[in-house]
Image (cartoon, rainbow, N blue to C red):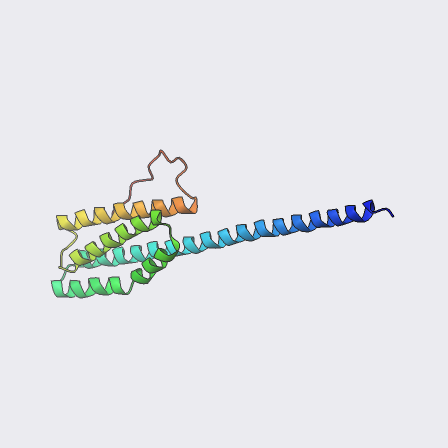
Length: 167
């Protein structure tokens, strides 16, 4: 009996099935990584948008002036309604430490700015300018870490990103 034909057929089928399974596994890995990256991208964008919203509202409160009591109430409301705490907790679950450390820093800087604005300080006060610069620098550092994590860093790693703009 000639066994060479059926053995070759079985080997060919085994190789075909194995190659198909390997290709499916590789495609599944790519899709899973793409989903993870998309989840991080969305979470990063939501956090940065919430930061921007809080900053804008705090800036308006400080620019308009008013009593310390009104400023305090408005500053705390701006922060509380921004969803920053839940967004930060979400990042803590999905972001690597290289992103979380600068994310925590920018969170603390915006919270410091909130506390300053809550005292009734205006945009004319030098303390406001210092806190603003600290916040903007921390926001730029967090954004750079997020871009690096997503693989969308600035073209040359030796080159600094553009300087943050105030206001």
